[in-house]
Amino acid sequence: MSTPVPTPTQTAASLARGVTATGWYIATSMVFFLLGTVAVWGLVVLIAREGWRNPVTLLVYVVSAVVVVVATVLLLTRYRRDGDLDDSDRPSWRRRFLSLPVIAAVLASIALGVVAGSALLGAALVGATLCLVRWGPGIRWRGVVLLEIALVALWLLEQAGPMPRSDAFVLVFFAVVLPMTQALSLWSWDVVLELDRARRTEARLAAVQERLRLAGELHDLQGHHLQVIALQLELAERMIERDPDAAARQIALARTSVDEARDGTRALAGRFRGVPLPDELANAADLLRAAGLAVALDVAGDAASAPADLLGPVIRECTTNVLKHGGGAWARLGLERVGDVWRLTMANDPGPGSTIGSGAGLEGIAHRIGVAGGDVASSRDDASFTLVVTVPADGSAA
Image 1: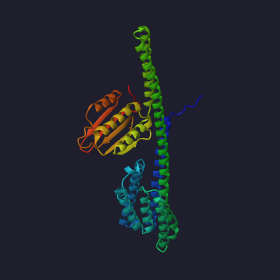
Image 2: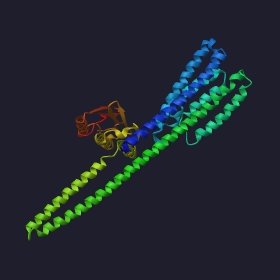
Image 3: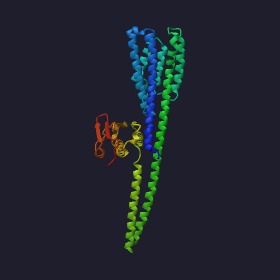
Image 4: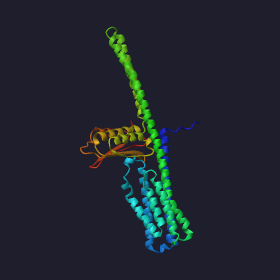
């Protein structure tokens, strides 16, 4: 009994799920290590040093710890989202470092250090927070090395303080290892993303090569048949007065050649329509960026299994409309699976005098999607035009 061989679409979807699972594992590990650090220090501050007797100390420590953990989750979410953007589309350094989660986490970390009576804890938490911000190549690791040296120096200074010798090693271990753990985890996540990006680039290049091959085949097919048809019609033209029957036979042969060319072209077109939707969306984003728009692309990992024969024409039609009638500065493309349906979202800011959203294009899209059991919804205001197309997960063009 033979073992089924997975299709390229199934393989891509499986790899995408693996990347997503790896991301969740890394993020969860980072959050749990942070929780462990805060909890261990909390036990010393609130129990061993009887901090629980002071309600203000207890409240400040708990609230600050919650703020640090929540801000870390938000920063990890943003870090993962920004990883799929080009450098030109990522937020500026001001938006990265002066964002609310970063400021809240830094202030809460300082508060934890003050309540715990340890500059070591505060510095470690601040450093761990700053690790979650995207830096330039090599900057994060240089910063971590300097931070570790500073943490060891702070630990040596605090040895003369009130920290009990029995719990010093455990506390110092968690405080010193926390920033390094965050940096190592993010480095491993960046490596996974880079490998996945290389895999997707390789798949796109393979698709481009396939298109070039199809274009060459189409050129050869059409060139051969057109040359034959031209010769047959020229022969018929010369023979039509001397031998009408022979001329008619040549015309019939030319008609046969036309049918063969049409059938061959249809077969090639059918192979061309097999382009996966992630490639369609990536190509659309490249076209829009080439036109000067800032493009945000959000594609589900298993998007290759979405019905390309339904959504592919929609993507091409909408991209054409944005280029011809949009006139704005940005566009957003997204494809995700929600339950039993796929949801395609395309949005842009219509420029002054834009006519996007009107005309027969949307009506044609709505008709095709409606026949397949899907739905099309559009909305427009002064700031944006949004088109949302939903189709059944197992749908296909009629």
